[in-house]
Amino acid sequence: QRLTQADHPTKRRATISILRQSRVGAMALVPLCLLLMAGCSQSNDSARFERYLERLSRPLSTPIPAVGAPARLETPDVGQLQIDIAPGKLDALDFLSLSGCQLQVTLGKRNSSLGKFAPPSQRLLLELEYLHYAPACIEYLRSRDEARIAQLLESTQNDKLAQLPARIFNATLASQEFHSFWRTPANLAKYPDNTSSAVITALESINAHAQRWLSGDFRADNREFELLLNEVARGDGGALVLALSRQDSWLTGANSMLQSRHAAGGLCNAGLKPASATILENVVRKYFIGEIQPVAAALGRRQHQLTPAIEALETTLSQVLPPSYSDWRTKRREVLVQASGAPRRHVEHVKTLLDPCLAL
Image (cartoon, rainbow, N blue to C red):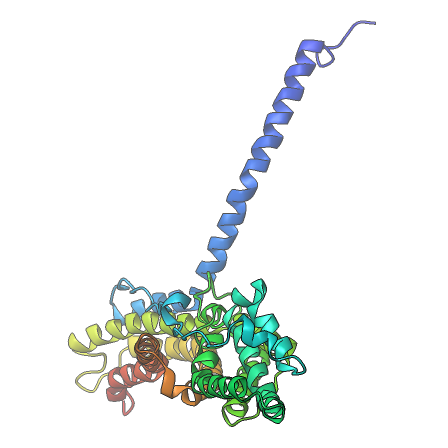
């Protein structure tokens, strides 16, 4: 039987080679497509602002300005925030003298290899254990005429009480989990619609625990505390700062367009209301009030939920906040105050330009 042209071995091998190359090429395009999709997702974050400025440009007869980058809030590294705490006074011989005390188990955990390299949260929990069990152990040792070791435990207890606010700070506001809370996200797709009250509940619970510990109730649930910190790490502090700052940048651009037209003589002069004034009113109503303001209101609500929960814990620990944290907190407040006022400032600029048209 005669081979057709397509069945010829040489031709068939060439066809298979082409198909393989095509498949490899298609697979190579997958990462590129994913990158393009990610880029589209990021650009969609600002789509409503782009539409608004484009629509403003026509009635204002003003070109769209270059929009500045959002203000960035760089959180100090955890190592820069951690407060140095002096080591304790107990040694191995003292540990062996605690037979019959629950405190011996706590010191055993602290002196283990895991205890020595424990993260700040676990170090805090071990210190709380010490403060919880120390009084009973001190009383027990004194009943056995072990005055020296009892005195040492009591002195250590006083040191740990003085160090407790710093321990709580290291385990919370200066922790890796809180650093993650303030991390700037790659994009803001669906924010703030994709948030929940879980992180707020976690922050409020941590502050309640901190106040209880500082008042002398040293009970702690290790697993619960770690879960609360994990919830904080998934929080949206950084997303909130970015969303408000980005909104501020875009509306500042819109304000500059309104200011340029006002400086050029405004819209309504000599008792006349041109068509451009009506177009501007419609643009503001449809694209600012209809698209931008609802998200701005949601961001404002989210800010009023998150900010008090964070600042309550900062107030609880205010006596030990190091300068690096206090400086960063001041900067954070300045950024949020500036950014959160953007919608109000924009409304004022719109009114300045349109108010002369209202009576016409």
